Image (cartoon, rainbow over the protein chains, first blue to last red):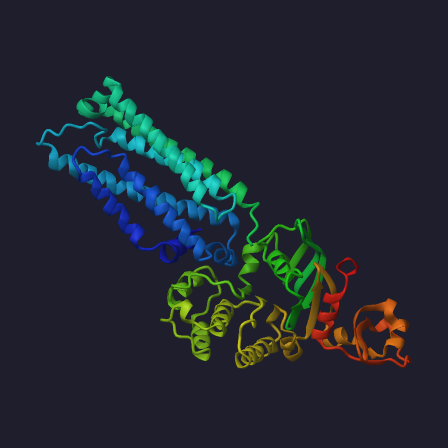
Length: 220
Length: 284
C-alpha cells in the first residue's frame, strides 16, 4: 500500500499538484471573498487533471502488473486523494489564519463565511460529499472520470451553495459565523469535529463501495 | 515442476468465448502461444494475470494457485505487453525507482548489468526508446526482480529482423539455466520456429493443440494433389485451397493414410495457422 502511494506521488502526480494547495490557499488572503471557492479549486482543477493523466499513462494496466492486489490499488489511490485534500484544506487554514492576523485591525465586513473553525468543518463536509460520489462512480470502470467528477462537483457545490445561502439569510447563523464567532468557540469546534467525522465516515464508505465495484472491473 | 498450469479457463463475452483453455509449461522451457488476431491470446494472458474475471478454471504458477497467492506469485512473474506503453514521458530511472520498491528480490547489480548489456541509457525517456529497446527494458525489469516465469504478449511484433533475432537468442540464453520459463504469444510464427520448445495453438477461443514443437508440426500433414485426389480426403481435411494446379490443404496426421498417392509434407507453423483460420469457426 505504502509503495503504491509513493508510486503515485513520485510517478503519477505532477509536482505542480503538490504546489497548488499553497497557491490556492493564498486565495484566502483576498479580503471578504467567497472562501468556499478555495477548496473547490481542488475538484475543479486537480482531480480532472490527475485522473486524465492516470488514464493517458495507462496507470491501471501498469499497476496491475506490479505485485499488488486490487484492494490495495483502491486504498492507495483514495489515500493519495485524501492526502491532497488535506493539503488543500491545511494550507487554506494556514492562509486563513494569516488573513485574520493581517486584517484584524481593518474591520472587514464579511458578506460570506469568514474563515472560522466552523467554516473549515463545513469545507470538510463538502469534500466528504465529493468523495462519496466521486470514488464509487469512478471505480465502476476505473477509467471514466468525467461523469464522476461532474456529479461529485455539482453535489459538493450545491451543498456549499445551500449552506452559504443559509449563512446569509438566517441572521443568527450569519452572526455566529461572521460577527460573534469568538464567543461561540465551542459551537465552531463542534462543527469542525462533525465535519472531520463526516469526512472520515463518507470517505470510508466511498472506499468500501469503490472496492466492491472495482473488484468486478475487467482490465482490458 | 510446472512453471505454468492453466486448467479449463472459460470466459464469455457477447461476441467471443474462451472455452476450457488448458495447457502446461514445464519449468525451463519456452512456449510459443500462437493464434490469429482475436483468437484469444491476450484474453488468456490477462486471465492468467488475474486482470479479467473468468467464469471457470484455475491457474497454477510454480505449483501455487494464482487466485490465492496473487501478490506472492506476481513477485515471480515478469510480464510485458507489446504495444502498451506506460508513463512514456518519464525517464527510465524514475520509472525503475518507482517499480523496484515493489519487489522483495530486486537486485540492483543485475539490473545494472542488463542496462549495460542492452545499452539502455537511464536518463532517456520511455518515449525515446525504440520498440525493441522498450521490450528489452521490460525484460531488464523482470530479470532484475528474479522473475521465474516471463509472460510476454507479442514481444517481437514491431521489431526489425535483427532486433527480433537478438531477442530470441536472449530468450534461449535465459531458459538455458533451467530456472526461467517463457510463455510468449505471437503471430509471427517464424520466431517460434527459431526458439520455442513447445507450441500452444489457440483458435476461436479454444486450444487446438499444445505440444512439443516438432510433435505439434508432425501431427499435421500438408497435402498437395490434383483435383481428382481431393475427393479422397476432402471430408477429413481441416481446410484446403483449390487452384489451377490442384489443391493444397491441411489434415491431421491421424486422418491421413501415408500409403496414399497424395503428396504430403510436414507443414510449417504458419501453414497450420492459416489453414485453421480458413476453417469454418463452428467446427473448430
